[in-house]
Image 1 (cartoon, one colour):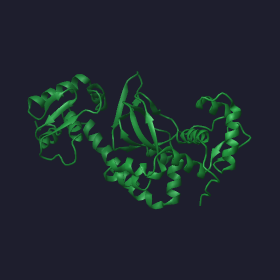
Image 2 (cartoon, rainbow, N blue to C red):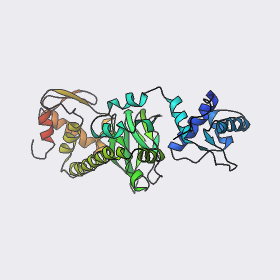
Image 3 (cartoon, rainbow, N blue to C red):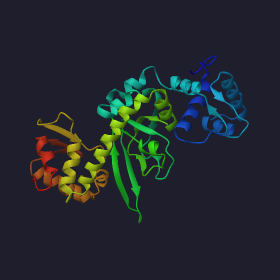
Image 4 (tube, rainbow, N blue to C red):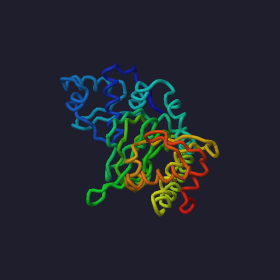
Length: 313
């Protein structure tokens, strides 16, 4: 059982705790006093040392004579999380996650913390050591690989309500691809240490997690089928159909591209020109209607899903 601190940290001490927790969640090494001072905009490293000593007395930090030996205690992590978000914010934030992702997050919510990533921010690169699992609340993140010759292979495009980044946590190997924010992203992240702690605290959280990973594996096989389809039209139709809501079976609805058409095309492994031609074919066939840039009306969702099978048009 974690022993509660003798007293709450002061505002400057909270900043230090939050900074250390952020570095820990990103897989970074513990900083020096001078680095903490620079990161927080303080002039003197001695100020950091004084606060660290106070945090140590409160049971929130374990000091060290080593240059990079600072580490948070469990009580320190809890204190940083407590002051980093309002009460019950995890439950509110995860209310938009449904299905297997929602079930996987339900018992892990307290181990996540809020993060924001500006457009273009790289969460990790191919070969990096696993540092975080990401649950997206708003915005989009693309996962891709840089190929020889300078080409880029887009593998996935994740959006609100999606959870990803678990695989390297499980096998301990580096990230197999780069993850980059397409637009501004608001998300919840959990460190590998947080996941291991959650599994130790309650092994039952692994069951919905395995269910989620099983679904993700099936989606990977579906994606192989999609990318092996002949021609751009079935790929585009399948991708647009994937944007439909679960209940959109036979009722007219609309879909919006989460990113630019060029980015969307690259995620499908086709050129922007091929994407444009496929959209035109779908419009001329009456399967979709253009409403504006990146927005389409789908009169009959079943027709769009049928168009995803080559030869159905």
